Length: 411
Ligand SMILES: Nc1nc2c(ncn2[C@@H]2O[C@H](COP(=O)(O)OP(=O)(O)OP(=O)(O)O)[C@@H](O)[C@H]2O)c(=O)[nH]1
Image (cartoon, rainbow, N blue to C red; front, side, top):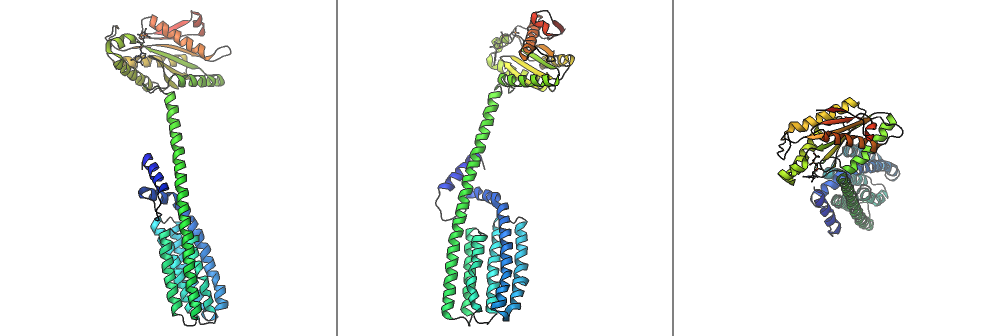
């Protein structure tokens, strides 16, 4: 079910006024699935309590109908329990939907049959008064188990019919008491069914409201996550954007300070990109940017951040690597772009797209800050451009900032 169809299914269920409680289509399956574990547990607990109380009625049988006490023992413990307990076991093991409801409803009907057989098996005076307790069986099915309404209705109708059948045929019971017993059981069936209907209706409504809220909250979370991803990602290249780079640069700088480790920055610029744009057009220029970005990303496994800094400029940040390793990495990136052999007939010597890279690596120490590292790498890039492009230049030390420290140059 898609997010939109779920929303409209919830809304239409919330406004619909139907006697029928079941939800339409997939929502019903979802309701069953979400409520099943708790419902099964509740039913098993209710079933065990009911079985215990059903057996405790033996005390009543002993005092009211001593002539049929053994029959009571046999039927309550020898028949009802062997039927009821396996059913509870099946429900405990996770019986689903209609199967669970049918099994639990059948325990109600069987309990009524067993009780009625015990009822007619005694001729003891006043033992028939016990019939007024039979409504408890309906209370168990309709309220304690809270059977789904159609199962509660079916089991109640069958139970009432069974009881009426036995009561009508039981001779020792005066006709006025029979009438009262039948009237009472019908009234109890109606009251407990009304309670059952309301319970299920409010359970379903609460479920819909909760589902709607959960769904909305999930939606809001997803939107926030998407928004925050959008605000941190460059839409053209899908690399980290300047905003994300700035945050990560500070983060890794702090890390390098804490661990006293090297932090290395490579600033990369596509050579003669203005000429490329002028020759091939801006759209093709965008395509070229994407390919270069993907190549840098694919070849930057040593790096902790690869970002598009702006325009046709990229940055690659690494931590814990030696000067030589960062320099070698920059060279690999340069070669990887050159190997793409993207045609560039916009006036460059190589006739293909190339990059220049400026590299700076340092171990943070007091008095040195992150912007200084950036300026050093940027100055190295400037030097790479000045020396003729398509090359990597590394700055040896921050003395370069005063103009005299450019060291290793490759290519
Ligand atoms: N297609 C496209 N072009 C861009 C984008 N961002 C910046 N540019 C272009 O990149 C070019 C950068 O040109 P310059 O800064 O003059 O540098 P260059 O031509 O690469 O020359 P050198 O850096 O000295 O090799 C400009 O023409 C910008 O319009 C973009 O998102 N898409």
